[in-house]
Length: 149
Image 1 (spheres, rainbow, N blue to C red):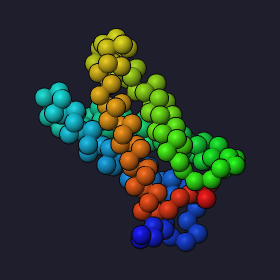
Image 2: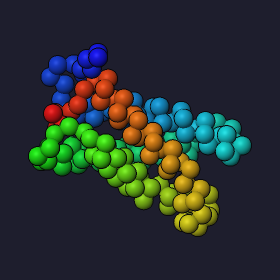
Image 3: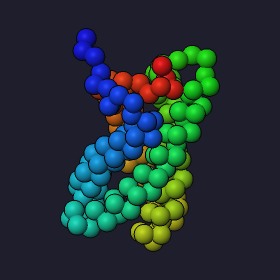
Image 4: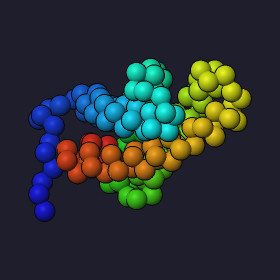
């Protein structure tokens, strides 16, 4: 089995998080813009605006959530990232992001919160899977953060 490609030696945990967030969001913006365009029938220039706004919110939440998660993780007796821990990470991230973006969708689309949540349900499902798989791939490529070793 090949070894992970470590981030530069001595890379600060903040540098790891910044790299993580930028790569996660970069891929997410492309996929979400294409998906929203296909679902809505609108062009990428239209779906790109809301995708970019969601991305800005997600970047802030991603950085905050992962900082808090790693602080919690560092206090745990059991090290590593089990399936359950990865699932809890993905669920926690997506739940918090949903609380932040559903009101924006409701305002942007001029629909009720319930309608916005239903509209967002497809994205929620997609991003639950995407977050889990991205984290798994990221950790395999770059190794676990210090908090999980």
